Length: 509
Image 1 (cartoon, rainbow, N blue to C red):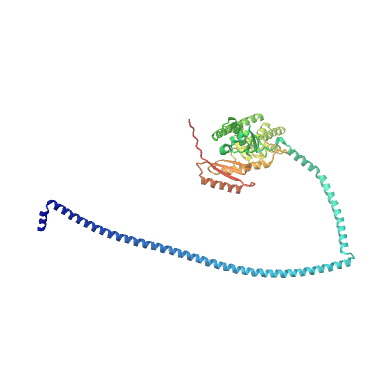
Image 2 (tube, one colour; image 1 turned 180 degrees about the vertical axis):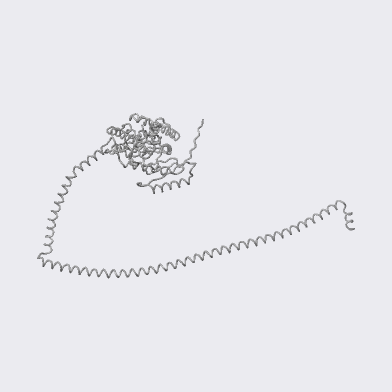
């Protein structure tokens, strides 16, 4: 302490402060160095522990991989051994089959040589038998052959003459029948007034430039028109003509009138097309009602329910076995009135029953019922008298006849349909097949519209975008195709196209 005091006294007050600061800094630096060494030692130990853990983990993973690889190698070796055993068995089987084939070959060669020897023996015996016969008959083989041919020729001429006489007699007996058949076939071929209705309509245009506008950009106009009307529109090289193809005459008429208005107006685009089709559809419905009213007035049938009047008008656009249904019903009604008058019955009732007898064919709904029963139910629903309802339901013997009116309607229906050339069943079957195609697709939930096009070779199904998603459309097309394949008979193939479309329309004002 004395030394310190001496030093302090010697150097002065300012120097003492500097020395104290240096001592304190040295002490602090030493403590920092000691702390850093301790921290470094701790960090070193922790890093060593981490390295050891990582090493142990990597070692365990490596051992696991090696175990899996060894197991895989053992499995491959077992499969190879199994294949080797299989190949050995196959080789043994092939050797066995080769030995069997060699044995069969030897047997075949032995049998062939034996057959050759037998054939030589048969030839020798046949030659001996011919020589003996020639010696017994006193004729050579050539002379015997000529004699046999001559006798057979005479017998054949006699038999042929008898056949010719029989054929001539049969021809005389059937000549009148064949002549009648030829006359009837001729009448059928030239029965132009009752010729079968075509399933196409030709729409004439002023110039071929309109075809491009009707098709639209990338075909959007023609696709919209086909989707809205259900009619296939064929635009080909035919000059100044477009073909509308559909089995339903109402659809064709709607498409024809819509095209006429669009071409006349000049504005052809998807929104306008839908607007015009909706408007024309409404006009056709009004025209159907007007046709029904005119028909009832012409026939003198009054007091019918408005719905029955509409169905009568709808008959104009339907056919029965190729015969126009409205014309057939009018003809049946007139025949019924004449026959009832001859029998002393009420001709007005008979005419009414005859006009309504096929009303079931144009019903809006088509359940699994014969058209006669469906027509009877419609007549009962709209308050027709019981004898009229019975005549409608019994004209194809689906129900028992209860009055004399029923057999009159049945007979007059047959008379109207039995005229040569009046009907052709092929077209009715064709239309029924197309209706069945559409009804099968329409029976699925979420389906909005169905159209059978391309003569029944394609079925377009329009579904609601909010009811069916994209995956469900694929399943739906497959299900429809399978059901059509199981339930229907049809030529060729039927392509099912399911269309799911989202459309948003806004109007700027």
